[in-house]
Length: 537
Image 1 (cartoon, rainbow, N blue to C red):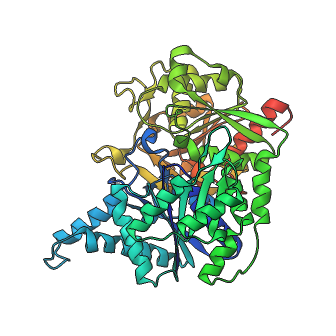
Image 2 (cartoon, rainbow, N blue to C red):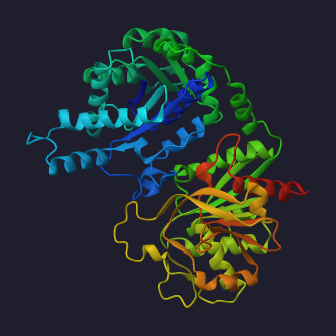
Image 3 (tube, rainbow, N blue to C red):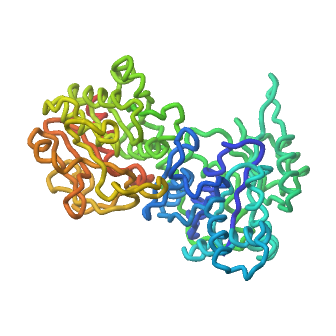
């Protein structure tokens, strides 16, 4: 097993996750089997209880793991399915060590950060990596070098390098910032030098430096970084601003990074297949047609809150033949001021998932606007429940219809708590989570999009369409064309007489991949093209 550890310095948000994903994509293009692990140094056991404003989207895996959004990038770039074990947090590590101490596994020894915490980290990485059967495991360390909470993880990977034979089985990739200062546009290397100095003080010498800069590094700057940071010139590469994240693998490939990693690890290429990825990346932007999709939610101030939807639209647009422009609309603004200009000019509308009462009436108003004006619409998770509430109120005349999440005393609880959730007290990892089978009705629009009657999609919810109201909802024209395997839970809704008004209780965005877009997002983009440019879907 070979390990590539990706660290970051200077500031957060330099793109460690995209760097890690891109290196994985490049190795896979040479026929190397790759897996990935994300280390998050926060004390939460997982990302499930975290507000999207705090940490971005909570990404859900097949096994129900609620994890960091970077695992979504790994799955999309590498086209693999990961497990919750591929996300290591401080909370997980300490919880495991404390449980072992309580059962006497340490034989009375004083439990300390070194060796007990670091040993736990090393064992977790090795066990997860080896269980996949991969040749290379890419491990991204969250945070930046110098953070107090990151120290045990950095010490653990330093020890791994020592244990496995320095430089033979481990490579350290360090992402740093090279800012451009002043009117003359000079690229500054001091932040990189200080970041590497901090890393070396911990006992880690970076093997590769990935410099984030607005423009490609000048040759003199590369040589200066190579000299002062003791990294070979061929291992100093630029990750300059790109049109999209899907262009980054080509940028790194053109600078010889793949060949350098292969040579350092002594790996032999089995194939050379990057052209398909290159063609996909080109299709994202090289389109004459452009459609505007309005994303109406409550976390719209942070785009990372909806990153899987954004990527699903990239995938869908590339296949449907249009560039998708996503505009964010705050549902609280709609609630307070009514339908906005962004909604009036939208070719399609998405209402994504969310929790809590804030902005709910704005989402209901949006669903009504889409239904009455025949604008292509997709509701996901909460968006599915919103579409149901709106239909009950404004088509079936159920005044005050609502979800018991928002109004426990509603006269028409068309959305209610799942029976198995009624006695749940803990918030973490207690929802209906992960991949669940969905039966799709033949002849439906969903069946046309998926092309099969049985699908597996990922869930994250506590509430569902109330079974007591299903018959009257369907009689009115809100047809449930997808159901759980036992036929009890409603999974997909389609509006009769509407070109594309579809909603799902599950999250189709989590399984969207380059070249294999989420069928429901593809359907929305296809309908938006027809809505704007005319013709049939």
